Image 1 (cartoon, rainbow, N blue to C red):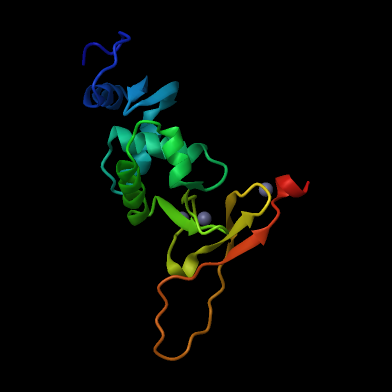
Image 2: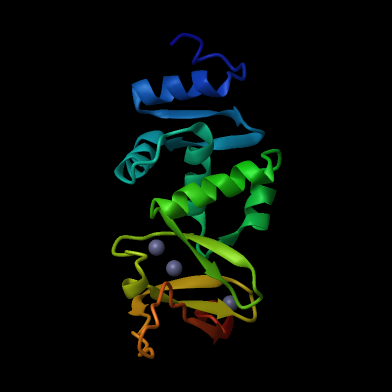
Length: 176
Ligand SMILES: [Zn+2]
Ligand SMILES: [Zn+2]
Ligand SMILES: [Zn+2]
């Protein structure tokens, strides 16, 4: 593709084509998101491909944003990162990621749904879900992948779909 080296803002598809064929990096404005830091597209693409998610510019950017987070992020916070992207597009992207096991959602201590990237070993299956921690001081929600949610004994004919365990308290950063 030509025109990859000028500073004009290219349409999303064109920008992507440049990146995908070269396997390197891009910077530009996509969906109103200013991508100042060049980043490696390839590993993000591979992550999507591994989970059978078709690559789009939006998905790459959302994935990149989620990767940067130290704690789980809510739709509202994500919206403030993607100033001009509409909420529905963001929400759909998150839903797709969740369905494909790329991220999982957590309802935090305030009843807000937050999303976290699935780390290695995060199966996100009901049997293998980890505990989450909500810090009442900084209001961040953390994944505790090493702490698995224990299996809860249920009455006969009760079929579990999901078991969640949220520990509330003060995180290491806030208590230290
Ligand atoms: Zn997960
Ligand atoms: Zn905290
Ligand atoms: Zn988690």
